[in-house]
Image 1 (tube, helix red, strand yellow):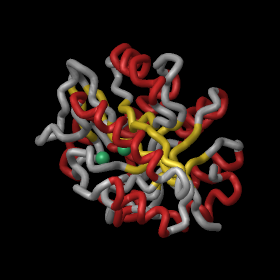
Image 2: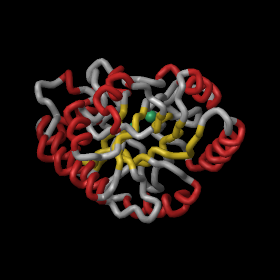
Image 3: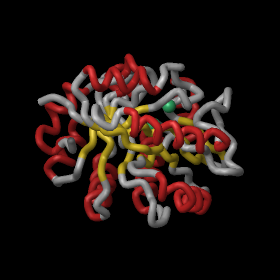
Length: 273
Ligand SMILES: [Zn+2]
Ligand SMILES: [Zn+2]
């Protein structure tokens, strides 16, 4: 089965991505037979939250958001006959900033058509760590947690909270890369697959009518080499009838289609097209 939809693509507005243009991404998708795409740039971080990565480049600055949305409007018209372009954002769930995120969604939600809610910044003690930034940042997260198992518990607890967060009428409907904690798992003995916690998240996703981002980016990361969520979690989600949307999470046009064969084999007809 081929992939017809990619629901997780970054853009030239990503400060840590490539400078590939919207046209680069779109033309490449058309060439590969993809019919529907969502650009999900990292939403501006909430006011008062300090980006914990060294270059403070995790997300698009708020000052650029209007231009991002305007350019997408223009592209929708330009490519009207060739491909369906959906306006979205990858919104961060940040524990303690739920109110700000709700306000942000209330303001911009009416203009957005398809958003992802992702947990990259995990609160530990009184700081936040961007767990997917580097093996070193992740290792610090593990050490501060006390053990890989504790780190795993904390991560999944945060993802569970994200599914329950009251983010208002325009709350994102899709949970991003649910097992992102496995990005560097090959550096550890521990498997970072806390079955009970994963099951609790899947049940919450199911009962709230949310979707899962079936994200192929991990297949290209040398310490991961698998999609997010982990194949066993994708299988559980399929059995539970949870809608899955393929996402390349491409930060350059060369990253499109990442892991798409694995994911279409795992999901079959359950993949939303
Ligand atoms: Zn990114
Ligand atoms: Zn992400």
